Image 1 (tube, rainbow, N blue to C red):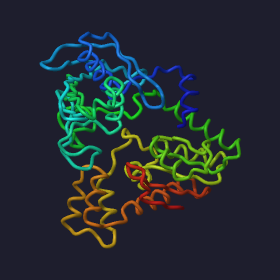
Image 2 (image 1 turned 90 degrees about the horizontal axis):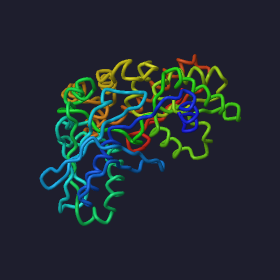
Image 3 (image 1 turned 30 degrees about the vertical axis):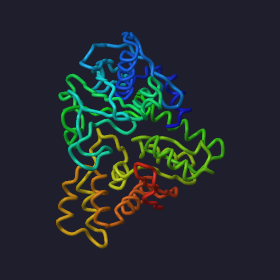
Image 4 (image 1 turned 180 degrees about the vertical axis):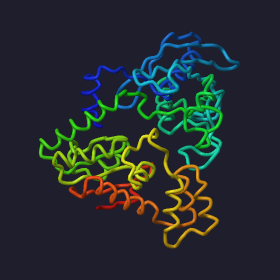
Length: 371
């Protein structure tokens, strides 16, 4: 869903936005740094967010801790609360001699124990997007020059986070000990399913009314940005973030008169499409690791039996990709893209040509298919 539709339908639905755990962690970290530098306790703290936005938080705590300061921010997820709504996101900060920002998992923050995630094994489960937001906040407090000569050590904690994590996918993914600190924008934008689908229809109609008949349906912001970069001549109106509502977006685009549809996503959601699962939200089912592993078993040359057994025990789709890449066995992504294109075309009775773009997490195009 584009920024235009998000703003329009946020106003229409009058739903209150909230903040991600990443924004709360960044707010707590900046408050602790300010307290260390000024030797005074701030009552509120503001942080910069991507896109020129900002967020302001009241502090739930600010207390000395050895040679550092521990602060806390209560997460408010707005009108779309998740299991972390109301949790206190704490940051214990101290200055160190080693340049850069260094993370440690405290109480209730998980640690990666299996390969295939966005973070290395043994690291606190603070996503790359979350680390970027925290880094923005730290630089706003101390400046980039400080981080070249000295460092900031941040221990993130969430009291009760280990129990909260049992209601998430973390235990299955091998993130143990607590929740993950997540969020690339810092903002939680709430939508009812009806409002979200309504936004998709509005954007499809707007594109078609302006003569844009080849539409790009994307599963999220990153896959949208990657396709925009790869197809710079496509008009902005063509790009529509359908999120998990891929089947709905396909059918509405075809019914309303699209002449061509591109699907853009990464391996997880496109593997669901490849199975004919057109609603990709986790509530509708997890990524089917045995399906992906079985597809890998059809590659030529095929994986050796011992590798195939490991693929079936993989932690994530990315984990399967990593093992196949290490064994120099290509073709999995192309197989998924081919099946996804076939399933998407069948979903709209082959009335509109479909193309599929499958990206890696950094934006490299791994596979392209048409149907």
